[in-house]
Length: 296
Image (cartoon, rainbow, N blue to C red; front, side, top):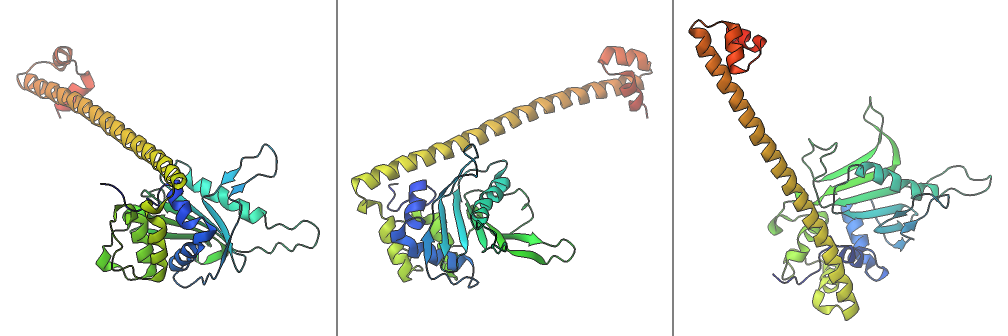
């Protein structure tokens, strides 16, 4: 099927919708929807998405989207398609950049910090530490262990598991529901759903329509799609290989167990006929201890 709208999971698609000054209304709407009224973002300023360390040899960080709102609060927004072993470590590391850059040189700074939000939009189920969580939206803050009260509310990590969102069009109630529906299904749609009639979605579907791209935009998007498909195919290949290896190992273990069970059954019959444990062990290949345990 030929896609009508861009895939927001691709680098080009995500940054076109959420990472450009021209479309910042989309990002503002998404952030306000995600925070359920706790945020009232009126404007955002895009910041340099490439962050360098304190030294020339320090590891850098490149964010998909990095911005601050009109209150000076910092937002890192990342689309993550592949699970990484140390993904949580990575998000913690990323959050240190907007913290450190707030440090004021000189002796007058009192260590006051503006809030930092690190948002991971995950195109996979993030089982690490969330195995028992049923929801697809996870908000993490520093907490006092005994009281379960938030200890520090200026550092927030939000993980959104896109595959777990399973609402149909007729079940969309909140703006957050509608944005999640877009993130999961945009590239599969052939027309704008009736449930998405808000003005912000008019702009989104205009910007997402592939037929309106110029040649350069189309080339950049196609390259981004190819890179995304390479990632998806690599994941599927790895999963198939892992499944095949596991299946082969299971079959081998099953055969070995079957052979062991067969020898045990033969050994029992030999013992029932009065043969000595030593002779049974010698003829079946079982150890003397294994044969002795069959007599009990």
